[in-house]
Length: 486
Ligand code: SAH
Ligand code: SF4
Ligand code: F3S
Image 1 (cartoon, rainbow, N blue to C red):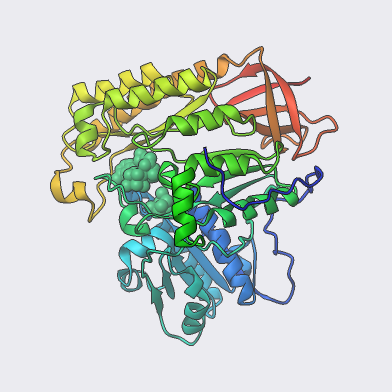
Image 2: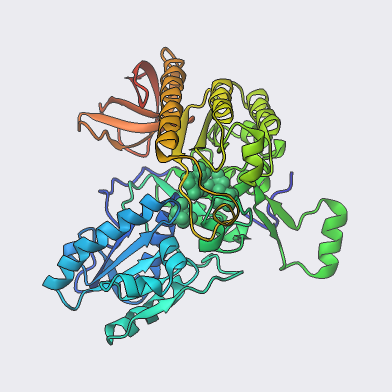
């Protein structure tokens, strides 16, 4: 295990979490032009919106949480399934109304749908003034200026290098306790159903020093949990090019000091402070190593929770999905997780029903995989063909919609059973919970997450968000655990 070279980790005195209302960090700025950003899709998009807010702050814009108040509206979009795009199209209709009331309002499309559809969006949706892909966010102030002078403005170039490593994000909708930190961008995997490699470009890792600085800074400001984000965190890799050739040779001869793997990064972030909890997403079954599992076991502050999307439980389907692992390989990874991290480690998955040519028996294998693993949680989808993907080119989308839906409902029913069963295991246990704020249903209760990513609700007492508490679990549903602080 190599740590990131030349890194001093400060251990400042433990600070009380600052009791911020759920708002952006610069929302109160007066007299500035106002930007409203709405994010769709995965956590990476939400993290990107915080980069965009930072870039726009330098250009003189403050963020607002009300669209009606904005001079500039950005939709940071997702293209993963057809209904993700439909949602955005629908939202644009509402913006047409806003623009009628305020003709100088500018509307920008960011993110994956912008990247996928490019200038076509301008033809199809007249309300849009700006189109910017995920690697063009530094250019946005210029695009806004262009659009302000009446031209439509577009930048959808994908980069091999851009990681926005030097930009310090402005936390939007923040609870002041938990934050996302991007550690890489893009994806090189080419799963045949997936549009991400086309909308986010080539995979690239971010300089680990900048990642650790960001996490340290969050901790110093009262945050107590960071989630390290990437489409495939296990393929994170950084070679320290600041070392000269002779140093590199010496390092390589010694302990490959110059290469930082995901396990190394995880360990370095875990050492910032024992009260800073670490999560990460997404792990890829073909790449997750025992090294990562051992690092998780070694540090109490690395949460025992792994999102390990299977997609299907059948080896033939996995092959045409181009996932590059088969059912036995996936099961072996699960067995290793259980062996190294124990039965209480939370595991979740993504499942797709009705992928091209999937037979009834193959679908049954997805269900039997779910019986084997007993996931704590799952994100479940009916296959949605995406233009330009390998599957769209190679395999007919031949499973009827009602069959996809019926298979999906079987997958969902199975998961509901295991979510409840896995939650029931915790009744009578004491779980350590990081308080994130008031419970959604009542101000008399607080809520937070356990190590395994379970939502836990308990009476407020004199407690505050940002604190860790031990909660004795007394009740549960398939979604929530309830208990008393002990
Ligand atoms: N990088 C992650 C997945 C990111 S996309 C991984 O490899 O696991 C999130 C999830 O959306 C995928 O895991 C998959 O289950 C689902 N998904 C992606 N493309 C899809 C499509 N065309 N139809 C239905 N679901 C899809
Ligand atoms: Fe898409 Fe596969 Fe990359 Fe995940 S690993 S983003 S599913 S191509
Ligand atoms: Fe969607 Fe793009 Fe994320 S397609 S899931 S927002 S990477």
